Length: 161
Image (tube, rainbow, N blue to C red; front, side):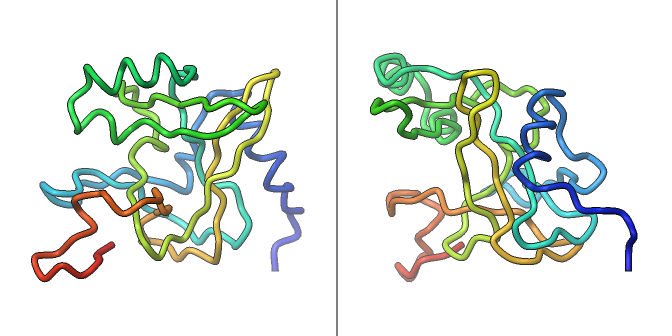
């Protein structure tokens, strides 16, 4: 048993946001296939409740989000995450390739992580936390919500991860 005290997950998330760092000690990027592209995988076991990764990008309001969706290709708009804050709809636009890990976490109807909003320096940040223990080698995932994602439909019409 480790004698090192576990940092509270919320504190861990906010500390990583302040430093602008991903958890490269426990996560790695791997190419999956031409449909999914890349994904994020655990290099070490992650405990249920732990902070996993921040979904980084540009914070924009709903008007700017709508404008960008009109000009972006469908491949870019998948990187836009909408959420509520102060009774308004906001968006984190992670469409710009910036080497951050959070934008590469894939969708799954049976996810191992959940997105949570925390405030850092007066602005909302989005973080993924483990819903259950995640084994080394396992892909990190969360539920994008909705049903219109093309990869969720197999040729048979059944939902896929």
